[in-house]
Image (cartoon, rainbow, N blue to C red):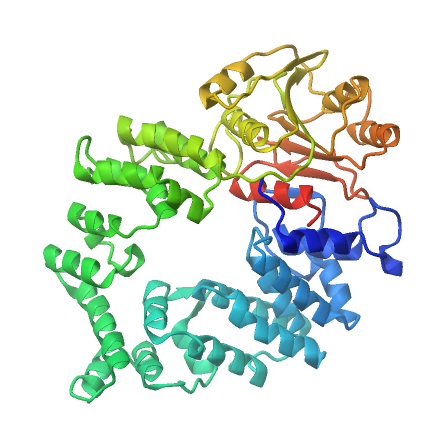
Length: 542
């Protein structure tokens, strides 16, 4: 888990400040502001995070709608900005939906604040397109206008506020999404370009490359405009060239990316080798299987050596804040030797497998502690061989990896292997490997899942615990006692406001968490977002 930043500490302090009348109900009450933060974080107001993403609408954002309708839209916008800029929104769309809602009501200050926030929060065109689509859907539902002065200005400012060369990259890399394109937005916003370079890009988007050539080829131009012209010319040449070497040269000279290259060219090994040189590490790990299957990565080749070096690079891992779980997903998917549907197959490279294992171990040291006291319970009452929903990784690998992450990063953490009537410690030291942790979990003690057992164990052994995390692949059942009731009893006994997280890694539905208790959370499936949600929950963000 990561270190709490000053902003997180401020958030914690805010949660401990005197509550509004509607927030009354004790330290574990589920408040309106908490429901809003949950929605902004993962798209649901409930105490359940599911890896299965659902469509957003007013019906599943009741706290948001109530706050905006009560004239508190500016507060909503500030919360959206705070959580988004601090990296707490694990799904970007709920924040965009909230901004769209704030712009649909007559609260002028909230409207203006929401439009201004677009410049900060929409880092990629896909996010802007998604915001516009939400505006359209809300317009139909709320029977109100859409392309007013405020939206036109916000869209124009988004384009005009960018560096011209960056904008040229943006409009050629992601051309359309959610039913909208740059051409639509330039036209509907009546955008007036802020300078000559952006005017060139506007003409390119709305009228095409031929018109740009006719207008600017012989025209005396500034240095910036010449750079933009040359970049767009390179993109166009890459689209129409039939010469593989010319495409490779354009990629290397102008740092073109995969999204700017035609599908036919992506069948070329040489093109992929050129793309590989500047490919971000996260994208690189996603495409390892394809590049191995297509013989771009051949055992003993310079490309394999370069890939292995980049994957294990300490500085790159630290700079990218790559979490061990993300590397685990890449590693397990690569080791499998085939794609999700089994159509693409490859023989995993031993060097790449070793590099991924090494990167996983190195990235453990980048996980900063929360400073909380943990008990991790891994339920082994049934086989952990099924796949975790949302990540296509075996549940035993998820449980082993997350146990390692918590045990290695938190100063006070105990990992228990349990099933009904049995509880044994899982030994994890600084030298313990993922394989060794996994081996300890490959044991079925007895049948029956009882999520209350780790809490009862802590109570019987006088352990002081801030957070209980349970990993199970079963449909959870209550034993002789309800886990929520056992947790409340434990709180009363110790005076510690302990939290409970139950991760049902292979299920779409859990009902362990008490919906009226902010200290309980259910996770259905398990993906990289779940890692961030656990952190947010532990640190009282949600």
